[in-house]
Length: 378
Image: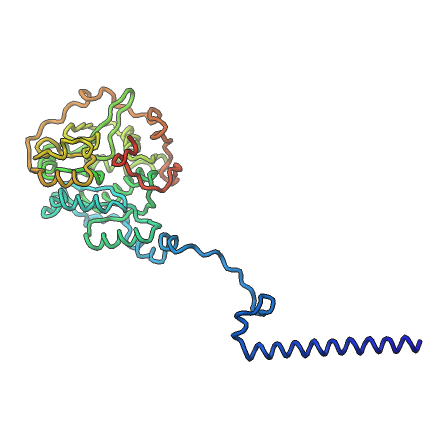
């Protein structure tokens, strides 16, 4: 019994000594670290008493520059609105909307240097604007378009992100904005690779129908006809009928020309004007004679697919002025069929229309449509 007590006392003393030694070592290390905090930078992880924070992966610098939204508010502030100006709408004979992608600066510059000059100086006759997608995720592109907008004062930003599947929505936004801001008699929606003879066009508008007019380049194939979206002129009443559709049944489509034909099916009285003075295809830049032609506006009202030097060349030798005006030819002489059925298109162009109110998508991606300049769509 005495032996056991001595053994317990002995063990207790050893334990107490060990505890005292460990406590002394702890305070010594702590005091040492407080005196020399810089040493903690090289201390092993287990010796650092600072709480560990797990950081999220950091994007590379290129990705940050391309997608940073720090100045998105500035862009949103400059998007178009659809508030109706009522009596304050500006009255013009012709409103021209050039549909363009944000990255198409070179195309816009060529237009500014050529036929765009006829857009100024006659305020009662014509108003010309570029319209492009405003909800850009690329910060560099966003800043460039804002600077261009501020410099030239001729660009309007639509509340759209861009991509091939947005053509129908672009057109819908464009006519909503046009109807809200202008009292126009005619509206021309045109692509940014189209050379136009605006003075010739303006000179003949007084001779054209004031209502029910649908004017442009039509395609005529077995069982189907449709207006190409690269050049479309409508009288004001047609635009009003487009916008007056029942919202619950109004259909949208990724391609504006098919969307327009779906809407036109509901309008009984209309005059189709297929204008043979519009060169549509192949692209003018792929046709040698357009790089040499002089006085192009003597023969044409517009030339599609005018890229780069071709656009500039046409502008130098346009001879754009009033010409003789011929009556609108009977559409049946060009195409006996006026029906439209989207099922006829091949798989590249055939998409099921969907109600506009649902803000539909067709899984076509957000990439820019490059078009026939690089062989796309041919």
